[in-house]
Length: 354
Ligand SMILES: Nc1ncnc2c1ncn2[C@@H]1O[C@H](COP(=O)(O)OP(=O)(O)OP(=O)(O)O)[C@@H](O)[C@H]1O
Image 1 (spheres, rainbow, N blue to C red):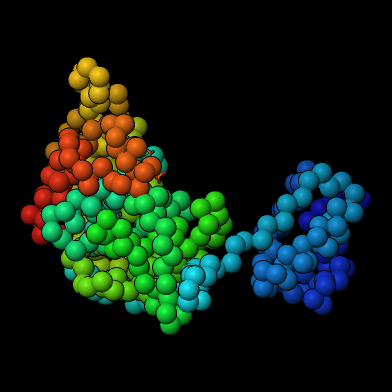
Image 2 (cartoon, rainbow, N blue to C red; image 1 turned 30 degrees about the horizontal axis):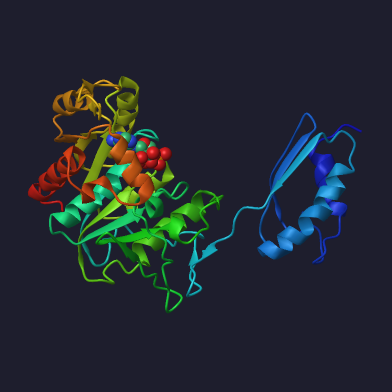
């Protein structure tokens, strides 16, 4: 008999589960795909411990079929528990009418980029620090839920507490109030959530986190995931934001991606507060020679063409990377990069959005 979706379903239906019933009758098998002997499905819909116990039984039943070359049964990660209080992060977002303000926060700025790796998270952490240095009370939300990097960049390891199982208390690092899913996960733990779980987590991070735990905030900086996906969409539709700043490298290709991000914010009627060119001039620490590894000035030209504010150019510098890796953003110190960040912070304050 050739291996088909139906034959796999039939085998699963005939297999009794340790907890009783069968996986098809209990609607636990999702996204079943059978192609050239490769079988894949997602096991979901019961407590994780139960799913883990039934997985080998189901794998055994499928492997016993003729023609199975490989098999992958994925159990998606369940909601994460915040240590210290039992609040669960992730899960389906609650219905919500229209965009809501973030309680305890006067202004909200999202930091976005058209593609990954252009330094968006670096800019978000340094901007938060620079705004704090300029005298503002600042929060930083790591909304890059698949790749939360703010705990490392801000040098934060403290777990957020939840005294009542509902409210989540943010932590503080370098004078900035911080919340990141990364603070609730092990460093090597991956987030394997589907869209709705991510939306739920984002909603919780905005609504359940007590952003004014250390006092009301002047501005919340949100580090978005790269690109133009669900999280950006959901954030713009569900939260009252002052607007977004877009980070790009000077390369054309990055700019092309940045244009997609600009287009997305335009479609969502989200004001773009300005563009930032990251990895602009490289100054050799040995001889002082200036080089433009990724080109130079492209972002400023694009901002002028679009009639958008150009907020500043940030140097490509080893100290920026090292400071990020060490958890002490470069904007905390002195030098060209710190000055550039102070300038961007000043422009945002002058524009009345921070
Ligand atoms: N101006 C800079 N000079 C030197 N290194 C930089 C600079 N900006 C960012 N980096 C380094 O580049 C790497 C990528 O930066 P970062 O994680 O901030 O990018 P990202 O756009 O947020 O990426 P992702 O979208 O994948 O999260 C990091 O190692 C960071 O330290």
